[in-house]
Length: 172
Image 1 (cartoon, one colour):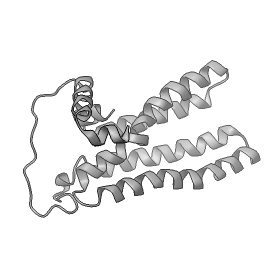
Image 2 (tube, helix red, strand yellow; image 1 turned 60 degrees about the vertical axis):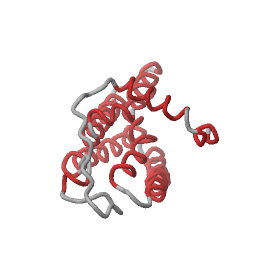
Image 3 (cartoon, helix red, strand yellow; image 1 turned 90 degrees about the vertical axis):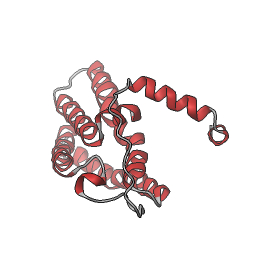
Image 4 (cartoon, helix red, strand yellow; image 1 turned 180 degrees about the vertical axis):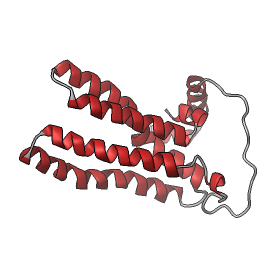
């Protein structure tokens, strides 16, 4: 997903991912069979959420921050847990008092709100709004890569490059 994110950009990727999650949420309301649960939550939600879970935090930290990137990744990662800490008990109470369909309705409403926030306010880089990444003192011209490569090839090139670094093997 990170290679695809490099190709199409942050805003477009987040918009597509959020739209995929909204489609999955709508389809969940019409779900009646166990196989539908597997397709909707296994494939559609898996595809839509794959950007938000692991790829998004490091990407934002690397493109929007020059300093304190570790702190940024930590804050973004913990915000996911904090959101679950708040939302899951609310959803459980709604399910207990009404039904799971009402809980999915709340998720759908929140998804629509998030979609519009992403669409209206998200930018690919701070330069799009006239800012430098946090901690960058001087404006360094970005390398403009006019050639779009295959995301799979980009991912494997990154893996091959990482295999040559001893710190990668220490973390693996």
